[in-house]
Amino acid sequence: MRTDLAQRLKQEAKALGFDPVGIAAVPGGANLRLRTAALERWLQAGHQGSMGWMADPRRTRVEGLLEGVRSLVAVGLSYHVAAGRAPGSLAIARYGWGRDYHRVIDGRLRRLGRWLGQQVPDSRWRVCVDAAPLLDKAWAEEAGLGWIGKNGNLIHRHRGSWLLLGHLLTTVELPADSPAEPLCGSCSRCLEACPTGAISEPFVVDARRCLAFHTIESREPTLPAAIKAGLGPWVAGCDICQDVCPWNGPALEPSSDPDVQPRPWMLNLEPEQALGWSDAEWDERLRASALRRIKPWMWRRNVRAALGRDP
Image (tube, rainbow, N blue to C red; front, side, top):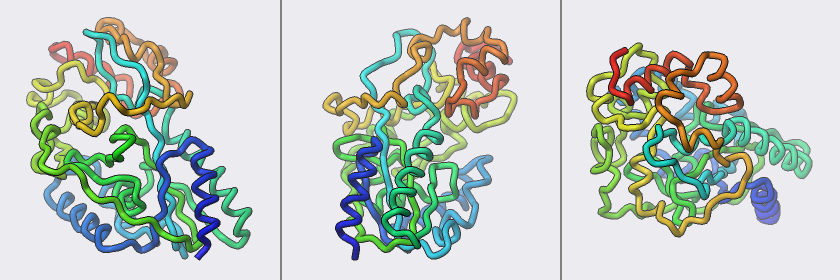
Protein backbone atom coordinates (compact mmCIF):
# COMPACT_ATOMS: atom_id res chain seq x y z
CA MET A 1 0.00 0.00 0.00
CA ARG A 2 3.01 2.33 -0.48
CA THR A 3 3.35 3.20 3.22
CA ASP A 4 6.95 4.29 2.80
CA LEU A 5 6.03 6.49 -0.16
CA ALA A 6 3.27 8.15 1.87
CA GLN A 7 5.69 8.99 4.67
CA ARG A 8 8.25 10.43 2.28
CA LEU A 9 5.52 12.41 0.52
CA LYS A 10 4.49 13.97 3.84
CA GLN A 11 8.11 14.82 4.59
CA GLU A 12 8.43 16.53 1.20
CA ALA A 13 5.23 18.49 1.86
CA LYS A 14 6.49 19.65 5.25
CA ALA A 15 9.79 20.68 3.69
CA LEU A 16 7.73 22.93 1.41
CA GLY A 17 6.24 24.66 4.44
CA PHE A 18 3.01 22.71 4.84
CA ASP A 19 1.95 21.55 8.29
CA PRO A 20 -0.32 19.69 8.91
CA VAL A 21 -0.36 17.16 6.06
CA GLY A 22 -2.77 14.24 5.66
CA ILE A 23 -4.00 11.71 3.12
CA ALA A 24 -7.55 10.67 2.28
CA ALA A 25 -8.72 7.79 0.13
CA VAL A 26 -11.12 8.47 -2.73
CA PRO A 27 -14.15 8.35 -2.73
CA GLY A 28 -14.04 9.04 1.02
CA GLY A 29 -16.06 7.63 3.89
CA ALA A 30 -19.30 8.21 5.75
CA ASN A 31 -18.25 11.57 7.18
CA LEU A 32 -17.56 12.98 3.73
CA ARG A 33 -20.98 11.83 2.57
CA LEU A 34 -22.54 13.71 5.49
CA ARG A 35 -20.62 16.85 4.50
CA THR A 36 -21.81 16.48 0.92
CA ALA A 37 -25.42 16.20 2.09
CA ALA A 38 -24.92 19.29 4.27
CA LEU A 39 -23.71 21.23 1.22
CA GLU A 40 -26.87 20.28 -0.67
CA ARG A 41 -29.04 21.52 2.21
CA TRP A 42 -27.00 24.73 2.42
CA LEU A 43 -27.49 25.39 -1.29
CA GLN A 44 -31.20 24.63 -1.15
CA ALA A 45 -31.58 27.17 1.65
CA GLY A 46 -29.90 29.82 -0.52
CA HIS A 47 -27.10 30.43 1.96
CA GLN A 48 -24.60 30.82 -0.90
CA GLY A 49 -26.05 34.20 -1.88
CA SER A 50 -24.72 35.21 -5.29
CA MET A 51 -21.90 32.64 -5.23
CA GLY A 52 -23.43 30.46 -7.94
CA TRP A 53 -20.19 28.55 -8.44
CA MET A 54 -20.78 26.78 -5.14
CA ALA A 55 -23.38 24.64 -6.95
CA ASP A 56 -20.85 23.28 -9.47
CA PRO A 57 -21.65 19.53 -9.58
CA ARG A 58 -17.96 18.65 -9.60
CA ARG A 59 -17.80 19.90 -6.01
CA THR A 60 -19.56 16.74 -4.84
CA ARG A 61 -17.72 14.35 -7.15
CA VAL A 62 -13.95 14.53 -6.87
CA GLU A 63 -13.59 11.97 -9.67
CA GLY A 64 -14.68 14.70 -12.07
CA LEU A 65 -11.54 16.71 -11.30
CA LEU A 66 -9.00 13.99 -12.12
CA GLU A 67 -9.86 10.81 -13.96
CA GLY A 68 -8.69 7.76 -12.06
CA VAL A 69 -8.03 9.67 -8.81
CA ARG A 70 -7.36 7.27 -5.91
CA SER A 71 -5.94 9.50 -3.18
CA LEU A 72 -5.99 13.10 -2.03
CA VAL A 73 -3.14 14.78 -0.15
CA ALA A 74 -4.47 17.64 2.00
CA VAL A 75 -2.10 20.32 3.28
CA GLY A 76 -2.37 23.30 5.58
CA LEU A 77 -0.31 26.50 5.49
CA SER A 78 -0.46 28.49 8.72
CA TYR A 79 -1.01 32.23 8.37
CA HIS A 80 -0.89 32.99 12.08
CA VAL A 81 1.83 35.62 12.43
CA ALA A 82 3.42 37.57 15.27
CA ALA A 83 1.82 40.87 14.30
CA GLY A 84 -1.37 42.74 15.04
CA ARG A 85 -3.48 45.59 13.73
CA ALA A 86 -2.88 49.05 15.17
CA PRO A 87 -5.72 50.32 17.39
CA GLY A 88 -8.19 52.49 15.51
CA SER A 89 -7.11 51.35 12.06
CA LEU A 90 -9.32 49.71 9.46
CA ALA A 91 -9.41 45.91 9.58
CA ILE A 92 -8.37 43.44 6.91
CA ALA A 93 -8.80 39.69 7.34
CA ARG A 94 -5.50 38.01 8.17
CA TYR A 95 -5.59 35.60 5.24
CA GLY A 96 -5.06 38.60 2.96
CA TRP A 97 -2.08 40.08 4.78
CA GLY A 98 0.60 38.21 2.82
CA ARG A 99 1.07 37.11 -0.78
CA ASP A 100 -1.84 35.64 -2.71
CA TYR A 101 -2.18 32.22 -1.11
CA HIS A 102 -3.58 30.75 -4.32
CA ARG A 103 -0.24 31.33 -6.04
CA VAL A 104 1.82 30.30 -3.02
CA ILE A 105 0.02 27.01 -2.39
CA ASP A 106 -0.38 26.18 -6.07
CA GLY A 107 3.33 26.63 -6.75
CA ARG A 108 4.43 24.56 -3.78
CA LEU A 109 1.94 21.76 -4.47
CA ARG A 110 3.07 21.59 -8.08
CA ARG A 111 6.57 20.94 -6.82
CA LEU A 112 5.15 18.18 -4.64
CA GLY A 113 3.25 16.74 -7.60
CA ARG A 114 6.38 16.68 -9.74
CA TRP A 115 8.23 14.92 -6.93
CA LEU A 116 5.49 12.30 -6.73
CA GLY A 117 5.58 11.90 -10.50
CA GLN A 118 9.27 11.08 -10.29
CA GLN A 119 8.57 8.39 -7.70
CA VAL A 120 5.66 6.89 -9.66
CA PRO A 121 6.31 7.76 -13.32
CA ASP A 122 3.01 6.45 -14.67
CA SER A 123 0.91 8.47 -12.21
CA ARG A 124 -1.10 11.63 -12.79
CA TRP A 125 -1.93 14.46 -10.40
CA ARG A 126 -3.80 17.73 -10.11
CA VAL A 127 -3.45 20.65 -7.71
CA CYS A 128 -6.53 22.25 -6.16
CA VAL A 129 -6.67 25.40 -4.08
CA ASP A 130 -10.00 26.86 -2.96
CA ALA A 131 -10.88 28.26 -6.39
CA ALA A 132 -11.34 24.67 -7.63
CA PRO A 133 -14.80 23.03 -7.27
CA LEU A 134 -13.78 20.79 -4.39
CA LEU A 135 -15.17 20.35 -0.88
CA ASP A 136 -11.81 21.50 0.42
CA LYS A 137 -12.60 21.69 4.14
CA ALA A 138 -14.49 18.39 4.10
CA TRP A 139 -11.60 16.63 2.35
CA ALA A 140 -9.12 18.19 4.75
CA GLU A 141 -11.23 16.84 7.62
CA GLU A 142 -11.34 13.44 5.91
CA ALA A 143 -7.53 13.49 5.68
CA GLY A 144 -7.20 14.22 9.39
CA LEU A 145 -6.00 17.83 9.20
CA GLY A 146 -8.66 19.03 11.62
CA TRP A 147 -12.39 19.25 12.14
CA ILE A 148 -14.89 21.70 10.70
CA GLY A 149 -15.95 23.99 13.52
CA LYS A 150 -19.28 25.63 14.21
CA ASN A 151 -18.07 28.72 12.33
CA GLY A 152 -17.45 26.66 9.19
CA ASN A 153 -13.65 26.86 9.46
CA LEU A 154 -11.29 23.92 9.69
CA ILE A 155 -9.67 23.78 13.13
CA HIS A 156 -6.44 21.99 14.04
CA ARG A 157 -5.71 21.42 17.72
CA HIS A 158 -2.19 22.92 17.43
CA ARG A 159 -2.62 25.35 14.51
CA GLY A 160 -6.10 26.65 15.27
CA SER A 161 -8.16 27.79 12.30
CA TRP A 162 -5.52 30.09 10.81
CA LEU A 163 -4.89 27.61 8.01
CA LEU A 164 -4.90 28.02 4.25
CA LEU A 165 -5.77 24.74 2.55
CA GLY A 166 -4.56 23.01 -0.58
CA HIS A 167 -5.02 19.55 -2.08
CA LEU A 168 -3.04 17.32 -4.39
CA LEU A 169 -5.21 14.77 -6.20
CA THR A 170 -3.35 11.75 -7.49
CA THR A 171 -3.96 8.46 -9.24
CA VAL A 172 -1.51 6.82 -6.82
CA GLU A 173 -3.20 4.73 -4.13
CA LEU A 174 -1.81 5.78 -0.76
CA PRO A 175 -2.66 4.68 2.80
CA ALA A 176 -5.25 7.04 4.27
CA ASP A 177 -5.14 8.81 7.62
CA SER A 178 -8.09 8.71 9.99
CA PRO A 179 -10.62 11.55 9.71
CA ALA A 180 -10.41 14.17 12.44
CA GLU A 181 -12.89 14.13 15.31
CA PRO A 182 -14.78 17.32 16.20
CA LEU A 183 -13.69 19.05 19.41
CA CYS A 184 -15.91 22.14 19.57
CA GLY A 185 -18.02 20.56 22.30
CA SER A 186 -20.64 22.87 23.78
CA CYS A 187 -18.71 26.06 22.90
CA SER A 188 -20.81 28.67 21.06
CA ARG A 189 -18.50 31.70 21.17
CA CYS A 190 -18.41 32.11 17.38
CA LEU A 191 -22.21 32.13 17.10
CA GLU A 192 -22.53 34.70 19.87
CA ALA A 193 -19.75 36.95 18.55
CA CYS A 194 -20.94 37.33 14.95
CA PRO A 195 -22.37 40.89 14.78
CA THR A 196 -24.82 40.07 11.98
CA GLY A 197 -25.95 36.60 13.06
CA ALA A 198 -24.41 34.99 9.98
CA ILE A 199 -23.82 31.71 11.84
CA SER A 200 -27.53 30.97 11.92
CA GLU A 201 -26.99 27.66 13.71
CA PRO A 202 -23.91 25.56 14.52
CA PHE A 203 -21.99 24.67 11.33
CA VAL A 204 -24.29 26.79 9.10
CA VAL A 205 -22.94 30.11 7.80
CA ASP A 206 -25.39 32.23 5.81
CA ALA A 207 -23.29 34.21 3.33
CA ARG A 208 -26.12 36.71 2.92
CA ARG A 209 -25.47 37.91 6.48
CA CYS A 210 -21.67 37.54 6.46
CA LEU A 211 -19.36 40.55 6.53
CA ALA A 212 -16.70 38.66 4.57
CA PHE A 213 -19.14 37.85 1.76
CA HIS A 214 -20.40 41.40 1.47
CA THR A 215 -16.98 43.06 1.55
CA ILE A 216 -15.28 40.60 -0.82
CA GLU A 217 -17.84 38.83 -3.02
CA SER A 218 -20.86 41.12 -3.30
CA ARG A 219 -20.92 43.30 -6.40
CA GLU A 220 -23.85 45.39 -5.18
CA PRO A 221 -23.21 49.17 -5.31
CA THR A 222 -24.08 49.58 -1.62
CA LEU A 223 -23.95 47.31 1.41
CA PRO A 224 -27.23 46.36 3.12
CA ALA A 225 -28.19 48.37 6.20
CA ALA A 226 -27.81 45.35 8.52
CA ILE A 227 -24.28 44.74 7.21
CA LYS A 228 -23.31 48.38 7.63
CA ALA A 229 -24.62 48.31 11.20
CA GLY A 230 -22.35 45.38 12.10
CA LEU A 231 -19.38 46.26 9.95
CA GLY A 232 -17.23 48.05 12.49
CA PRO A 233 -13.72 48.59 11.07
CA TRP A 234 -13.84 45.64 8.62
CA VAL A 235 -13.27 46.63 4.99
CA ALA A 236 -11.88 43.36 3.58
CA GLY A 237 -13.19 40.14 5.06
CA CYS A 238 -13.74 39.44 8.76
CA ASP A 239 -11.95 37.43 11.47
CA ILE A 240 -14.38 37.88 14.37
CA CYS A 241 -15.55 34.26 14.56
CA GLN A 242 -11.92 33.10 14.52
CA ASP A 243 -10.65 35.71 16.97
CA VAL A 244 -13.01 34.41 19.67
CA CYS A 245 -12.32 30.71 19.06
CA PRO A 246 -10.53 29.16 22.07
CA TRP A 247 -8.46 27.00 19.72
CA ASN A 248 -6.89 30.23 18.42
CA GLY A 249 -5.43 31.13 21.79
CA PRO A 250 -2.07 32.80 22.58
CA ALA A 251 -0.25 29.45 22.75
CA LEU A 252 -0.30 29.09 18.96
CA GLU A 253 3.14 29.23 17.39
CA PRO A 254 3.37 32.05 14.83
CA SER A 255 4.57 31.32 11.33
CA SER A 256 7.87 32.71 10.07
CA ASP A 257 7.04 31.86 6.44
CA PRO A 258 7.86 35.00 4.41
CA ASP A 259 4.89 34.51 2.09
CA VAL A 260 2.33 35.01 4.86
CA GLN A 261 3.94 38.00 6.60
CA PRO A 262 1.80 41.17 6.52
CA ARG A 263 2.38 44.17 4.34
CA PRO A 264 3.03 46.93 6.91
CA TRP A 265 0.33 49.29 5.62
CA MET A 266 -2.33 46.64 6.27
CA LEU A 267 -1.70 46.86 10.01
CA ASN A 268 -2.06 50.63 10.15
CA LEU A 269 -4.63 51.56 7.54
CA GLU A 270 -6.06 55.02 8.15
CA PRO A 271 -9.63 55.54 6.86
CA GLU A 272 -9.08 58.77 4.94
CA GLN A 273 -5.89 57.38 3.42
CA ALA A 274 -7.67 54.24 2.23
CA LEU A 275 -10.60 56.19 0.82
CA GLY A 276 -8.28 58.46 -1.14
CA TRP A 277 -6.51 55.75 -3.13
CA SER A 278 -6.62 56.07 -6.89
CA ASP A 279 -7.12 52.95 -9.00
CA ALA A 280 -3.40 52.98 -9.77
CA GLU A 281 -2.49 53.16 -6.07
CA TRP A 282 -4.92 50.32 -5.32
CA ASP A 283 -3.24 48.28 -8.05
CA GLU A 284 0.22 48.93 -6.62
CA ARG A 285 -0.65 48.21 -2.99
CA LEU A 286 -2.60 45.03 -3.72
CA ARG A 287 -0.24 43.56 -6.29
CA ALA A 288 0.09 39.76 -5.86
CA SER A 289 -2.62 39.82 -3.19
CA ALA A 290 -5.66 37.60 -2.74
CA LEU A 291 -7.57 40.80 -1.96
CA ARG A 292 -7.49 41.88 -5.61
CA ARG A 293 -10.88 40.18 -5.76
CA ILE A 294 -12.11 43.40 -4.14
CA LYS A 295 -12.15 45.84 -7.04
CA PRO A 296 -11.24 49.52 -6.50
CA TRP A 297 -14.87 50.70 -6.49
CA MET A 298 -15.76 47.94 -4.00
CA TRP A 299 -12.83 48.97 -1.80
CA ARG A 300 -14.12 52.54 -1.67
CA ARG A 301 -17.66 51.27 -1.04
CA ASN A 302 -16.45 49.24 1.94
CA VAL A 303 -14.39 52.08 3.40
CA ARG A 304 -17.29 54.53 3.11
CA ALA A 305 -19.56 52.02 4.85
CA ALA A 306 -17.02 51.53 7.66
CA LEU A 307 -16.93 55.32 8.09
CA GLY A 308 -20.72 55.48 8.19
CA ARG A 309 -20.91 57.59 5.06
CA ASP A 310 -23.52 57.43 2.34
CA PRO A 311 -22.43 56.10 -1.09
